[in-house]
Length: 257
Image (cartoon, rainbow, N blue to C red; front, side):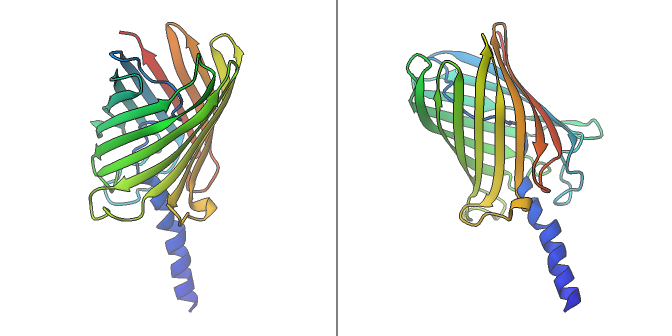
């Protein structure tokens, strides 16, 4: 009986936490009311690294986050006043210094509720279709539905993204979707400069959340700079749970062209 109990505890401590690490960490961002104007083309560069994080693979051949880098160009096009299309090309560098094109991601953002003159509430939906190499995710094909909501004033930005992740391949299609919750609150302290917090919680299957310490929950201190030509987001994140990477550094740069 003691051996059975020990085996069950070992399974909970080693297998279940791995459910919180299913996705490539190529984009760490809370979506708000920003959207391209019709016909506008944009380029952003997402960069993040994990100075201290998970180093044991969850499955054979996985590239783990610890001491790795993720660099992802994002190309976006404004289709209409409320629709924007996007393309991600995530590149990843492992702890040994090996670079790799990790996959391909397509997205469509719909923002029917927008702020008036940068003040007021906003809301919409972002759909993202992904195909990622197996060494970066056990589920290579997936669909993400990210709901966007929030409120903006001259000094404050509040944004929330409830996210449903649907597996489309590798024997996982049709199963209960994963549920994540991303939050952001920033306050302007100077012209074109805001600072605040971003919170990311990967809770596990929808309706059946994992125990708190088995979730991947992280808190970032962030600064947003919007002083042309410098437009970027920078943040340092700390893992709040045992399943989360301890330290993560991330940045998003808007590139001129």
